[in-house]
Image (cartoon, rainbow, N blue to C red; front, top):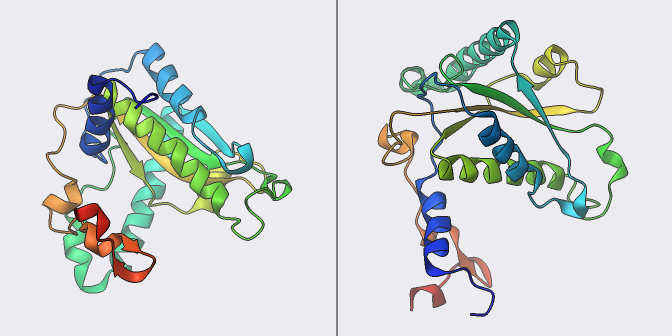
Length: 220
C-alpha cells in the first residue's frame, strides 16, 4: 500500500502496542531530559476533538508535593478497598502505584475553559477526556519504545489534587503518571497475572451492525 510504513516500522508500532504495560515497579535512575522531552512531545501530538488540545501537564519535581501525592493516593486506596467488599483483601495485596521509586512524576489534567469548545462536544462533552486519554496513550507507547516504563495512577480525589497543584477553577486532574527505568517488563498486564481480570476476546468486544452480533468477517 502506497502510504504504509516499511515492514520493520509496522512491526515496531505493533510491538509497542502489544508490549506496553501499566508499570508499578521502577528503578530510581534518572531519565535523560531529552527523552522526557520526546515523551511530552508525543503527548502534545495526540489527536483531540475539534483540535481543542485540552491536555495540561504538571511535572512534579518537589519532593514534598510528591509525598503529598502519595498520601492522597494512599487515602483513596483505602477507600477503594473498603468499597470492594469481598475483594478487599485481594485488592490490598496489589501494588497500585510506583510513586516512591519512579524517576519522573507527571500529572495530566484537563484544562479550564473547556465549555468554549463545542465542535465535536455538543452531544458528547466527555470527548475532552477522550482526547487527554489519547495524549496519555501516545506517551505510553513512546515510553515503551524508549525502553521506559509508565504507570497510570487514578486513585485520588480530583478536587484534592487540583487544590494541591493550584489548578484554576474548571481544570481537572485526570492521571498521575509514573515514568522511569524498569528492571523488566511484565509478560502480561499485572492485573491479569494477579488474577484480577482477564483479557476479553474479540467476540466479547467487537460486533457487526448491531449489538451483540459477533463480527464474523474478521475471522475469515
